[in-house]
Image (cartoon, rainbow, N blue to C red; front, side, top):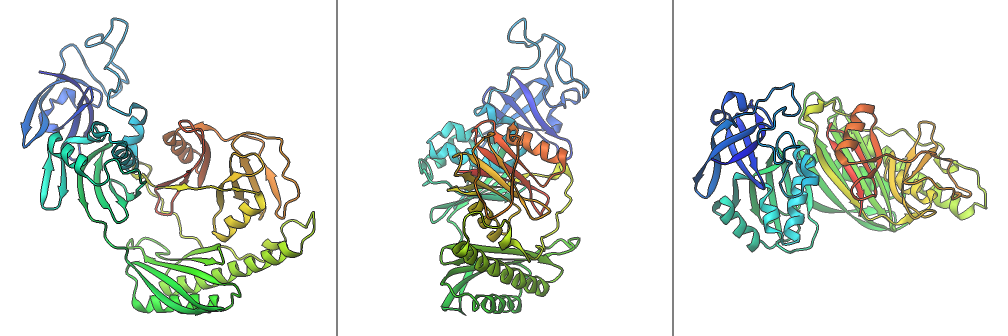
Length: 472
């Protein structure tokens, strides 16, 4: 009868997990005696094998130990590895430095799984599955380490050093290798419970050609949920009207329209447009009660951004050294942003990670890019210091620059009014940064990643979950 540790138990669903060394065994509340139903309990159990999967049954508290919800550690030496050591053995699964991160953030589980496959680490990938995990591939349901391990080694992504697109909400995650494979995950408590693998579904986009100021422009339209053809026609006409005022070549444009299904949302209609004007990216996003209102606001916002771009280019062409700060930002319209959903803290998850290829920029260039992208903060490579830095737009229209490390390097003359923060961002892990975000109530936190040493930003998304921005 082997020993182990009760890793977690969900009393609402009756599911639980027992860990022994690098092996994890699924079990249920009914298989665990009442006194052992507490995470961290030292237990003994039997192993039941069925269809290649192993489960823990007859789970009993190990003699000589006791647990209480008010205890953080055991007060007995029973089961200790050494006479001077109390409590259960350390967490022994692969990737121990990611243990808590994997349990808290399902997207990170998928990312570690994909990294293991890229490195041909079959055992490392298998360690992220529950013992009764199921992989649905073609017309087969794969279970057990042997079948799943065989599928992993035969997969086209085994040893493929291509970073997948990973996205999702809560426990439902999708990893996509374009033109190769798409894998959907159901993840519980940091482990993969179920997967569906198949060919990537084609992008649900259509491209429409409209007439711009200097010729035809291809506009890609992406719609989600309850968006009608009339909404699409209105959006295309609005974008075309704005682009006809542009004197430079418009290389490409993309419009996204979505209607949130939550009736409690005050402004469920969101509209977003991204336009590539001769290599410059201009972006706007708004929200409104109806899609018609959202499209009207989007057109106004896009017109304002295009006017800012024209004023900025003219200013750069005519300015002399030491130009007046802030000239090109006057008359800016306030952004109509989607409201934040006040999601309960226990339901929040890290559901998106953006990895940016950051060129080194001056502060003026970073401010211009941030404004064109319609962001309130911008992570970039500081040309003056060669390090990661964050530029923020303040309430009064000026900017604040926070560098990864304090520096005496002078900014020199700038077209925008910038204050340089005299403090350094804290060095934190991602979970610690999220805790700080919740504790402070801020919209985002700039920090030095304790593992990579690079500047990261964790922020609060409009849906109440978290997002993470990291440099490439």
